[in-house]
Every structure is written in structure tokens, then in C-alpha cells.
Image (tube, rainbow, N blue to C red; front, top):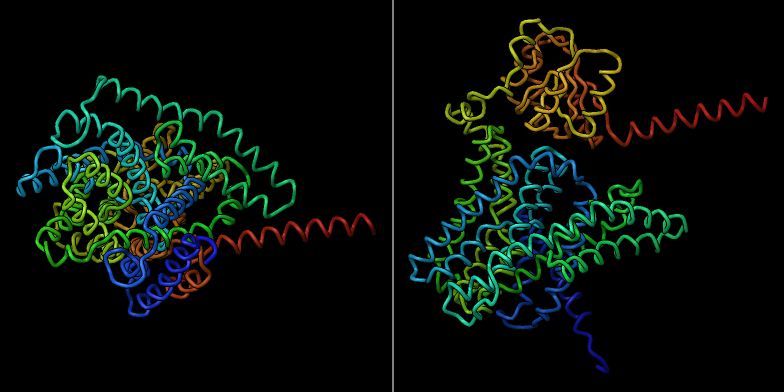
Length: 568
């Protein structure tokens, strides 16, 4: 050929084979991403036949990570991040420490030195944000309380890994016996500088970015050009991500996430999310293909027991640690299981850490192969792990009195204060969920002077509500104890403002058992889902898009009638 077409060849081969293998995987009832991973193995350097450009595929995958994290930021406000800080910050740090200790113990058993164990353990401790987001999006759980906790947890992990990547070279010089140079400066000074750079970046984004980028998006939208608007969105995502990495040492993923958060302040954020969706999906597929390309299948035959040990730490070890931590913070069982499932895999930061460890001469090449094997297997298993969350929740609650006690024991937020209960609260509204929708409903009830009790899983939200004198209980409303504490037996209405239809069914059944005459209103995203709830539960279901359409129709009709009257 007259010129190089490696980029075109790589994209075509990666997407083409991902389509074929993804289709086959779905047909045999496996997650599509398993097919994407297999496509990467087929075109990778460790299998015969055509070999795609691994470096190019890796860069394309980075673009996918940026766009995906940008999309999350568009739906994830600063308030969402701050609302989960009390569990996400300590939980993520402790979980990283526990998983790292597990990896170090395994490495020590294999005869590796201290520094190799640290790098190996850290690589197993951090989950892939991309894998988590795909799992939450496919289940419609990204905007739920559990989804916000899981995303906040991984954002904290990403921040910790940014610090680790900066500190690893000087640590390798101090503790390792590899090729890393001895550090010239003070380790604490390096840490302080890194934290300072990250803080400056976040400060600039929250103070300057929240004003400038929404303004820029609006100026481009005023031109009326859809192409320019889409281009502006993509440039903002990639430009901020690249700039944050080049100037402040922040990862591409974290930079893109904050880019989305600042653009969320714009009234056009929903349109920005829609315009970038096709690109996000296509490049996210390239991420999974690139993971497959790094995998050498020979490690499964040469070191099967080591691979099983690594997978056990990723899928069971650190997930169990997270599970116990979330319960220790007195969050519901389903929150603990969701966070555990979210962490039962590793991804992009693990590859970067392993690569840096090998380059510094402190991690054996064997360790990198085991980390890649653990990543591929855990990513492939992750959708199945999420599928067992509900059955596991039912099984644990039915058989473990300890699990139930851990959720409620000595927890003042799990029941209404004594003086409230003594007033024999009745004829009120029980509002389940205090997110964006629930908050609006609560405000409307307060304006009308109607009594209500909020049932919410986010403990921080319940604390703030009680500080304002609002009746609220913390917990999972699909559990009878929570609705009992909300006095649903004496309520006149149950309003379910959370989007999870499966949990809504449980709440309705509990409420109807305790109060057969209660009127129930449910929120739904899908007309099919809404029809099923109406038919099975005989409740009133409001579908977001239909309610928006009805409101617009009423507005148009009133305006047209008014205009007709004036002209008459």
C-alpha cells in the first residue's frame, strides 16, 4: 500500500471481530463484553494469525475511557460525590489496604521481595471504572443510591492510584533492588507536591471550569450547528482529560470525569450526553478488545494455581472486605452486595501499575502476566457476579440473623426518634428515595403542609433531613423493618421515587400487607415496565418521558387556546 493504514486496520479488525464475538456471546447467553475480550485475544500478539497494533489499540482504548468517564461526570454532580464521602473515602482507603495486604502475602509466599509484593497487591486492589459503569448502566442503576456509592468509591480509588503512580518510582529506589534510580528529593515533599497539583486541578475545575465550559457550550449551541456542538463536547472531554494529565499529573479518566462534572452545570448537559453516547459506546468496546490483546493464554496452562489464587483475591477477597466495611457503616445489605460486586474485577489502573513496576525492575514479568490474567477473568465474570446479587441478598437475609443485626444494631437513623413515634403519625405520605425526583416531591409536600416520612438509603441525606426537622429513616425500603419504622401501616400514600422496578415490587407487597388500603405511586423509566407494575400490583405508575410529553401537550394546548381567544 502507498501509505500506512495501521490505524484503520486496527479499528476495523477490533470492531469487526468484537461485533462477531459479541453477537455469539449474547446468543449463548453470555455478556457481550466476553466476546469483546475474546476478539482482543484473537488479534493479540500471543495467538497465531493477524496481529493488530497493540500500542494503537491501547491509545484508542484510552479515548474510550475518557469519553465514558466524561459521560458519568455529566450525570454525577459534586453534591452526589460529597453525599457519599463518609463511606466512599474511608471505605476505599481501607479496602485498598486490605487487598494490597492480601496480594503482598501471596507474593511473599511465592518468594517475591517486599517491593514486588507492594506493586502486585496495589494492582489487585483497584477496580476498573469502565467495567463498573457498563455494569451499572446495563442495569439502570447508575443514578441509584447504590450506584452513586459505587462510583464515588471508585473515584476515591482513582485519586489514590494517581498518588501511587507518582510515588512508585522514588519508593522503588528506596525499597527495591531493581533498575529504579535512588530518589533525589524528600519522599514527603514529592507526596505534598502531588497532592497540591491534584488539589489545584480540582479547584480550577470547580471554580473556573464550572463557569467557563458551560458558557462555551452555550455559545456553540447558539450557532445552530449540530456538528459544532458535538465537536465542542468531544474537545471538552478529551482536551480537559489530556490537559489535566500533562499539567497536573492527573489520570486521563479522572480529568474526563471532572470535565463532565463541570459541564453538568450547563442546561445543555443532557444534550451533550446524548451527542457523545455513540462515540462512548464504540470506544468502550475498543477498551475491552485492548484488554484481550494484552492477555497471553499460555499463563493459564503454565501457572493455573497462581491464576486461581489471583482471581480469588480479586473476586472474593477484596469484595468480602468491602462487603464487611459497608455493613460496618450500617448501610443495607443490598448496598454492601452491590459495592462488593462492583469491586470484583480489576482494569486499567492495574495494567498501568504492573507496566510501571516491570519498567522499574521491581515486579517480575510473571507478575504482570498474572495480573492481566486476573483482569481478563474477573472482567468476564463480573456481569455474572452482579446477577447473583439479588439471590445472594435473599439467601443471606433468610439465613443470617447476624447480617440483619449488622444493618440495624444500635443505629439511631434506622428508626424514627421516640417523640415522633409517640405522636402516632398517621395519614401521611411515605416517600421512598431522596434523590433529584424525591427531593422535588418532598419540597412540594412541605409547601402544601402535608406530613411525610422519607425512607432513604443514603445515611448522610437522612442526617441532613433530621437536622432540618424532617422525619426520615435510613435503610432499604424493600425490607419490612424500614417501612414499619416509616409507619406505612397508618400512611395514606406510598410514593416510590427510586427507579428500581424490582425493589419497587417488594416495597409494594410489604406496604399492601401492612396497609391494604394504601394508595401507591411508582416512578418508572419504561412503558413496558410500567404496564407490568400496573397489571401485577394495581398501582399508579408515572413514566418520565410520558409525563414530560403530557406536560408539554397541556402547555401547548393552553397556549393555543389563549391565542385563539385573543384573535377571536
